Length: 479
Image 1 (cartoon, rainbow, N blue to C red):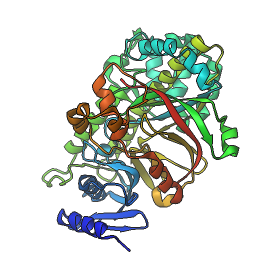
Image 2: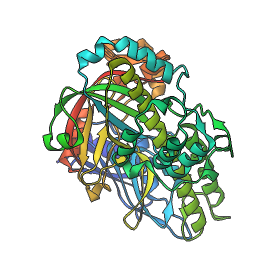
Image 3: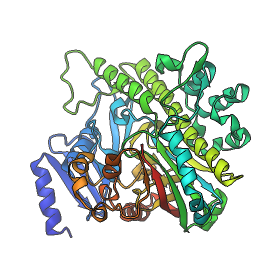
């Protein structure tokens, strides 16, 4: 039975043109004037706030179709669901046939998570914490990292991702990673989603990053980025699935290192380019879609669909390398400070990407793949636990899971009001945030995010994932 509060909410949403129902912790959403579009579903606890803007964005996404052919087959969203800045809600998952939608991925192509573990105790880490932090600040904030590449290596990154980068670096190693264990890096490739290698091409990369010869000193590589991106040191507080934890090299008491970053300016460049191209290719004389989301149709422009997917793969390859280098710089500093630390990779996976699945494509915006047996990494805030899980391949939810807890308060709201609130109110008491910008600490305060536990619990109950281990934050690097 629906509560009186829920009934009032549904009536309020109806006044905004939304047909919304709630049953079994799932909202069903569509536009009242688009009843032929697929019904979008949102997995969300009843206690969580509902934002009409996010619902409208999701309902609009369900209506996207190309007049020459191409349709949306299914739309759903994970519990970190909240409005997106570019008209697509964060947490959206869309299955399409005969069309792709560049705006549904946006500009931070292959933003994703990477997780390493190390056989260090919290006490051992904290004993030399200050030295480690100063070295990492130099790499992450003050430009002391050396990620110089040959032109051939950069070309290999864009074309073949991690596999191409490894081959090129083995021929001519450059930069700080000349000190890396390349045998270890090679054995870790199968712990990266799609081996960190997609079918990209240099023609989509910014020209200055793919010269014909010489060296490239790219200021974007091995950078965290703004917003909710981070590198975090954690410790493994509890293991719940001991069989999988053993297989994945996870033990209680270990340190964990989590990297959350994406394709940086390369993704912005390629994503912006293709949003403009999709609009320019819209059928001449036909009214623009109200959502301003322009699909590319494989019936009308098959070559453009192929080109877009190749361009997206090009940015995705760069993002895989960006996370790898962020983690490798950290691993090198760990060895410098703490001795011979292996710090193996557990997994690396994307949450902003289009992938060929089933009879068409699935685009995830702020949601990650959660196929059967696949590791899933879901962070909390910098004051809350993060989780390592295993996917269950739930087809009803497009074999997906959330990419985090989801924002509760906007950055604008926190930048305007947050500095007037107490540390306790913001959830910052005891939080060790390493940043050069105080406003970043406030914008990303734990109070900005939904509580992670119900986000995880509802996905476990719905059969999307199972928990393998829970991790607690020690310190967080925020750019």
